[in-house]
Image (cartoon, rainbow, N blue to C red; front, side, top):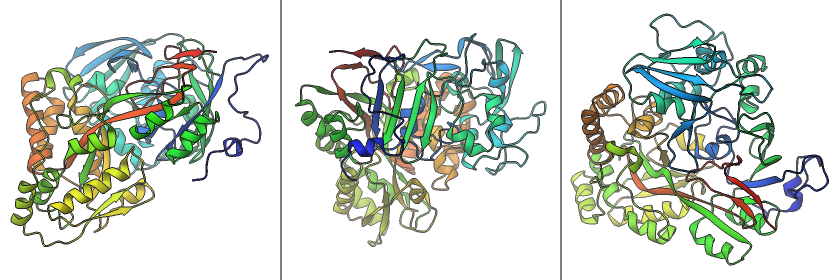
Length: 545
């Protein structure tokens, strides 16, 4: 990509958006900023029931969309009041929440219980306007939307089922109280209510939109910033929602621009054309900070980089080949060489904030080339090609990591061929060549249901894509989602890790992910331990000098 220039920053705005110099002598003297990101949206929409991605989290959450239960972005990532001021368990299937008063949507409407009920109803999730019958759940038998409403793409009902596999109904108790009723017991209801995809939309704005796509590219929600313009693959412009319930936002305007190349993002920062450059690789941090005017913030986050297997591929049908691939990887070498020790090799697909559910003694498959070679021989592998689909640095250090993995697999006798593709549609395309791909997995709340089940369970993306399935794993996933026995749930989780990471690998974890953002030191701002960028008053400390 060409170097970011003043001309490219202004392209497409018809001169209406000046460079982000801080306004002087104007009625609104709040600053405007430009943020250079690797990508804005994988789906080219801003609808949280469609855009379930790391890049989407960066621009959506804390800025546009909000849920009833929020997330402590600048702290431990735990639950905090948001559009609901309080919540309580009624029983194993039921949670009630008290709505915050005086919340305004971006169009000026006041948030009501009807908006909350609509946000979890058939019309929004499935494009179906039929009423829900007593005792009926929101589950559908097909990913295809039912005719009669604003039909969303098939990914939307698939994601809705993943988030809410057994939601029976959401109902208004009174004008300020809403009740969630699940079809089965679920100890994670509060987590599901607070995760992204459970954000609250304006019913009136949705119904007034001319199409689902028109809505999805300019959704009306309650966050501190509202959408002014969205040009897919180019830019997203937000401006302050001054009726925000959390107080007047500290920025007048935020412009996210898509700059795929790291060097161009860094050049834009150093030249003053952007104020924030995202997804900085660790080997670039020292060079940026040699200039005393700039700093890089970031840390590990609740996301793991993983490699995913399609067991339908002839060379991966035998689990011994997939197990060999997991033992061939020297994960610590990747962390040391590409990340400079700024991240770590975790205890499998889990995080310490799971609390009592966390298995501290669990380990990833050991780096054991001899064991990998033995498994390759036992499987009768004869050197046939194993395709490995990869994007061009969608993930930080993605290309370098992929090249290292290919060499590690080659060293144990596996002929893995790297295939660079342009987009996620090509990554996920179903054909005889699909075998290995890159991915990541986030913990959206403090229970393994949020990660292991959400992405690899019966309703998870990997199984919806037809890459992997395991009968015992799926049976246990349902038990994990419905059991209220904490001791039993912990044992079930461990057995699921044994299946998915060791016996019949669905994936293998490479390392915990970390994200780094570069900015001028004069801007006093805090990077959450997440992909999300928080530009609310609590994170924005102003500009010095």
